[in-house]
Length: 223
Image 1 (cartoon, rainbow, N blue to C red):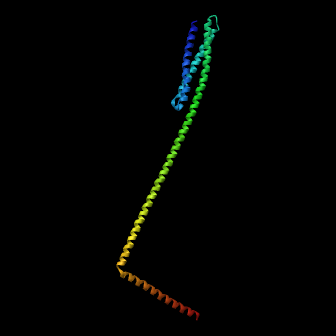
Image 2 (image 1 turned 135 degrees about the horizontal axis):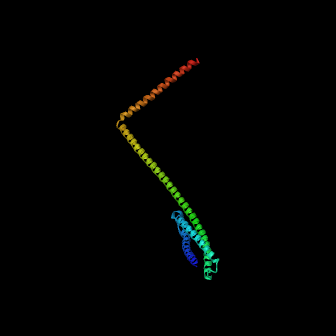
């Protein structure tokens, strides 16, 4: 009798502890589903594994205790009908707990897989956004560089145009001063005209002489 009471209390304690751990274990599913953090980084996988190990150990102890109670039930003369019903109830609870743990394990695994998948998708999206942002920044840098080069070319063109304007103004000033000098010295114009007239006269004389010599040469050749 005392052996039954000890196993009965031990079984009740293990069942209550198992229920508490299983409740915490089940809450991981909803916690993982709501979480936007990476499962590995947040430590959810470690908590899940720790609770799963504890539940497996409790279930093994419950199985051992139920086997010992079942061994006692083989001698119905020693146990009362209420004790036999209690042993049967412990056995049914053990089976329910085994099925519930198996179902919850599958739910947690699915939640973790889905969370990892979503985390991977988020990481891919973040990587794409980062890559797109880098590309946009690079393109903006190239456009800014092109704008700076264009501004520099325009500035050089303005400077060259200004330099040409200064040179043109300088040449116009020189021409004006030369015209003023020539107009203030009429004799120079006369001397230039005489030089040109003498050059033309010399050219005519040289042409006549060359023509006369050519005629004499041709006459000599014909005769």
